[in-house]
Length: 547
Image (cartoon, rainbow, N blue to C red; front, side, top):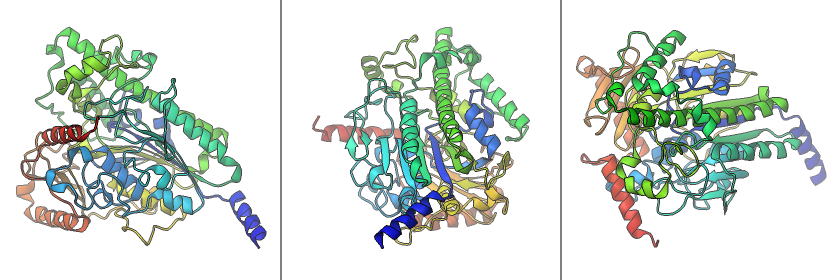
């Protein structure tokens, strides 16, 4: 009987035609950076995914990385699964509360676990950021093979922290075993190498695979081989305002942004032409390193796509590409100049190379998020709108584009539907909806126009309903008050129409209150400040460290 069962299983595997899944996530990449979204950066492989499949213009994520990734892995709201706030930013009143553990808390089953139980090979390479205890690492969350960075960021060449807020070197894990990095390690290349090896090793049994490739690019520190940086040095000498205008006009020509918008520059952004020449030179190279790092990531994505094509399985592979949040505006060097002078080579000539530290700052982050307002860690569209591309030639028509609202919590139900896998009945219910109907052409939307979708992180909050957005931002991004915007006519969130739409404000406010109650949101205090809280938490961590 056992032999007969084994033969049956082998036969099933040999004829298993379920789709493979390749999920690629960029870190801190802006909405407009790739060519498919109007950017000047050379991204032929990301663009290829847009032309092969479906391009989303109205896709939303959390405003910071770990909460987004928790929803991406589970399909459940971040407050339910343990990432109600970034652990580095926890408000005092959130400590010890359910949903604020700072790691996956076991209340939801990961997509990888469900797919693995359904007979999929499951692989992960790259940034995890959902816990580094044995029970929260990918090896215990459904991934049969994994090589990951446990923290939110690290040097791209060596096992070295990038911020003084980390008291120990970053943790890399090969399965459940802490790993050292080889001398020739470079994050984008090395993660890609791992993934290609696993795909090859597991291909002989005919089982489909779920491959999660989570690049460190383009999270700080911005680092890439010098030849990639050099390609962009001349481009960014034109300055951020010029590049932003060019991107916006290209978006208008492509039909992905409305014409007639006035691009408003935040007061904190200096006029490029008024800056000293040496500052312009440094800032141009900062963006050149960013662009080069993104191009290298794109090249790495191309390696995987080409490999799958050579193996004859690309057309039976669902490929998803997305970013985890908006562009990063924070500048650590301004806060800790002595730390960076001591621990990194900060010369112009060495920018982007091994032992250097580069960040690109709010002006270039503004360009990355063209035409939107605000940045990563805010509830503005510049913090929470992200690129999303999905290709699957067997079921998804090529060259499609949509402005229908979609959320990161929709990815899991979508992939489970395509894979024919049921959600778990023994864990928190899915928060999102399947996008399969939209992708295959049987529906024009994921959410009806009368449905409200809410999110919250570190005091910033938003409610979306039928093209409208009710938003609350805390300083430095806002005034802690709620404002209503029509994103269809005002995607930059410049005109508050709350006074003109009291009934809509009431309806959306009630929806947010229901969301808070249902998901266990613990609102931050009225005096909560992200930067102050981050410093306070880091100091407490330092004082508690035995080192």
